[in-house]
Amino acid sequence: MKVKPIEEIQGALQPIADEMSIEIVEIEFKQGKEPALTVYIDIEGGVDLDTCEKFHRAIDPVLDEVDPTLGAPYTLNVSSPGLDRPLKTDRDFQKCLGLKVEVKLFAPMQGKKFFEATLKGHDENCVYLEDKGGEIKLEKSKIAKICRAIDFAALGLE
Picture 1 (tube, rainbow, N blue to C red):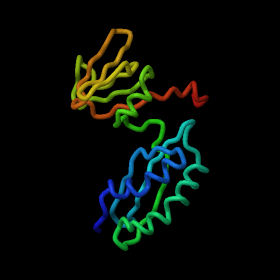
Picture 2: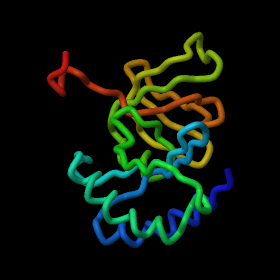
Picture 3: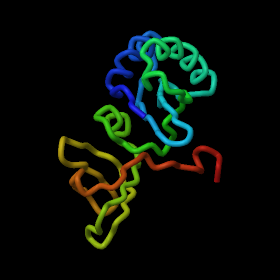
Picture 4: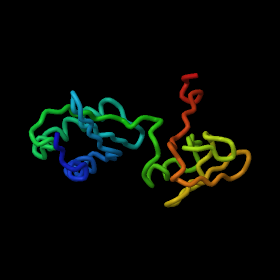
């Protein structure tokens, strides 16, 4: 199935997101038996079902005009990216500065493939962490996944 470029779809949806003070985190199209276009959103204070529903209703007519699948049927989903979403953008890293993060590496470094430490900074090539052993500098190219650490006790889920 042919699909329009994600950039074109985001360009059409961005004015609505801006008007509603919503950040479009990512747009993903999954092909297969049941094709689906998923728009992951975030908002100050966190995403709830009501926010997803309002944004879904607002973008549905715009997507009908844009016709991202060139007439082929698909399911539209609007979702939160989740608490454990990977940090990808500069904004993601900025929002997590000073917070605990979990890092999984492709290959062991100092005998470890997993780190949980405080995010102290980042640049184009590296991530800087701090734990009780001191500062850790990791090249982004060696990181399989980095995400905010979830404190289940603080969430009352322990």
